Amino acid sequence: MDKDLVFLSCCSNQELEFLFQIITTKGSLTEFVTTSKEYKKYGKDYQRYTALLANEILDFGSNTFWFQKTYHDVAKEACRKAGVDCQSSDSTETIEMKLLSSLMNRAWKSMTEEQQKKFIECSGNHGRAVYDVLGRIGSSAFYTLCRNSGLFSYHMTYLIANELSYLVLKRGLSFSANVTLLKMVASLTGPISPIGWIITGVWTIADIAGPAYRVTVPAVAWIGCLRNIKKYQH
Image (cartoon, rainbow, N blue to C red; front, side, top):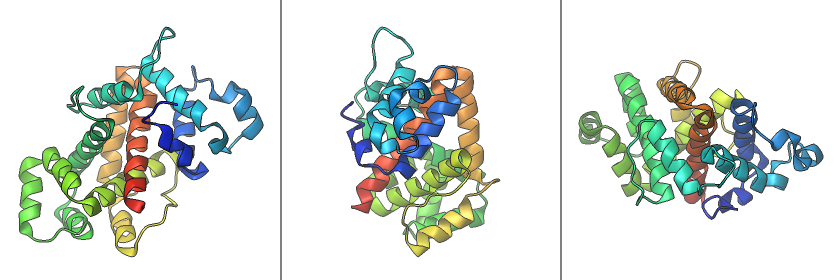
């Protein structure tokens, strides 16, 4: 398995279900998971064939039968197709965080002032200064705050992951979370939430970019969420 995807082997079936659904719905015409012997034998026990799910994402990202790209390259291309600047020298984790920070920035601009205030307060940041910085700088501020604050990074990632889960699996996350975080999720996610609008818009761009990106853009976003959530849960 690709070195940047090895951690998926430690994920639960609930965490892996998103990847399965994205591969088999967005990539329904060309995916090989549902015809594999592993799926026929283990069904929804995704932990039994995590490597197959990871390999399928790389295949979609490679978009060729001749060679398979690394996850780092797949994530980089997905990020760029979503309209996010990233460099080849960026680490995989950095590329994922740039994508998530950009999603949050776009959603931020669509939030009401009350929603913005709620997000800032629940993320452990207080005072007008932080609010003003986010309003002026946008995505670079979200990315900087994520690098400098584990709590902010975890809360932002959980919020995005919850919305991704809602859009694909039709339910919120079942991962454990504290009361403050759950209150923020309840106030900022749902069928007509700013985050949902933005994610849907980005996916539409990915759909236009080509069939492969219908899988890789949401998959990279989800993998980035899982990586970060697990990082701060331990």
